[in-house]
Image (cartoon, rainbow, N blue to C red; front, side, top):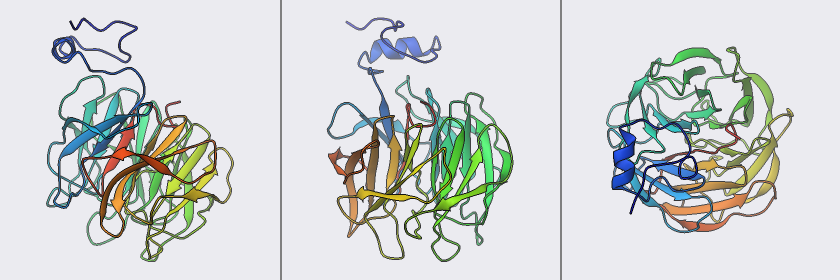
Length: 321
């Protein structure tokens, strides 16, 4: 029989309205660190949210739905909330929506981005989520904007990337957000960073091992190391490279994905980095993993519901640990 959540059975902030839902579905929330995969193309646009546990290999399970079927948005998170901003549910939107990790339900409205956008990425720590770059309409953007993840409301201007571009990789440590690669219109190897607690323009960090476009998917990280996987150069690649987030410098080869692909959804905890779905020779729903501390090739973890142009978040990414 299910029981009320206690300090040993669930973490995070609980609202009174969440308790009946927990009693009704006593399997949620599970113990441990969780990755969520939102929206995408399969091959039509979908509103699906599914999840996996970092500690339990296997296929993803259903969590709930986005407000609308969409792709091309950007995802970030705190320890209790997953955020999905922008995207293309038919026309490009500026809507920000969120889900509570402790409550198994659909997303609800959070606020708005400063402009409609797609093909961009996001990064976050425990306090703020940052969105960088993108393709609002007919031109590429250099805008970085931010939200306070614990407080619903509209995004605020943060500063600018070193160059306007779409299709960046985004990741964070607790203090820095990094935006790498992208297209302008040629593919770029640029890595930029900002200090999350201070608004301002981005600073050059170094270069990726290849100039490539990720189609606007977040990358993964521990608190010290950032991981970038896949992309187009313009041919699809299986490249994984990494940086030490605290030290500016060029990326280093880490290993390879199981196949060359772009539009790969990435998220992490302090130990594992996931690469979910993507556009390979055909749309792929494969979920693969690496151990962040050890350079190596990716290995299979399971399968997702959705195939490509997914956004991924977790309750334990590198910005939160």
